[in-house]
Image (cartoon, rainbow, N blue to C red):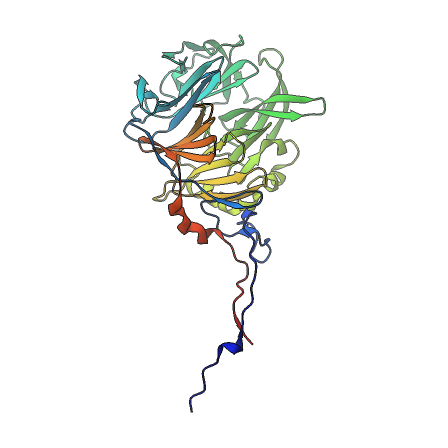
Length: 429
């Protein structure tokens, strides 16, 4: 005989509250060990103090920036005169802040260059095939630079300013070059070798400024990072007279990309093979302790796996949003979606991943009093990500610059963001 079907009276429904994943992405802990506010997958949603917000969308802003990947985006910032500049893969230097790409200089070997703002002038150092040049807001001029060891100035690939002095380096040696005269970026530059100081070898890949309090007040230190992971810290303002070696320290090997470093407050963040490391921790711990001190510790496995997969591919860069609420770590994926971002909220120290933006590099621009800040990242298209009422982030991909305005189509990704540690459902009693 067939048994009667159970009736609804045999079930009891229980309700459960699942908190929003404000703790962000967690790829470090097991699912049973992590807090219920953490997420196993956090894609295109950004964790904030009391909620999770959706990543914004984009629309077109400027076209005609060369014919291929746009690898360099620059803000010229000279007081009230602010401009957005880009270099196309055709080796042309453009002004693009009007929404139209206007050619200002041609003949560059490619679209890759580093830059600084110095004394109301933008100093641009191409990727080792052209001499550095300057932009004064209206015209570009090649610089006359003589290096003391007779190395050709067109082999320079890096530039940094420190205490009113400009420093250049090639990236293929253990030397940097400085001027005996302050407030200048052209003329004679003297070689400063660091190979006799370091113990682990490698070439200079990055130079930046670390601000710390060593017990006698806050001071800026020149931070030199070698491809081997050795970090050299110097105090003083003139390498020819008062430079003093504060110490040599060891971190995991950095990603060999000059843009894989950024200033965050007084600290300096470096992308390494073991995670994203604040250099303020270098002077306090050994290389093992540095790994635990990395700001990416919560997504350590994700970062290490990505560096192993694409760490030698161009596109790694750190970009700090102007309002300071996001630190964007851009990385190549090696997949059809070529560039994604690990995004860090420094206020609550939470992580997420942005996908389908496909940026390659970044800059920023102030355009109006009401639209105060326009930060930018780029690759083949150009995209601006709206992060606040007065703040935009620009991404470049292909030959277009786009403004992110909305992302209603990203709502379908909502289910990918939420993590449910336990699923509570109707139970038979």
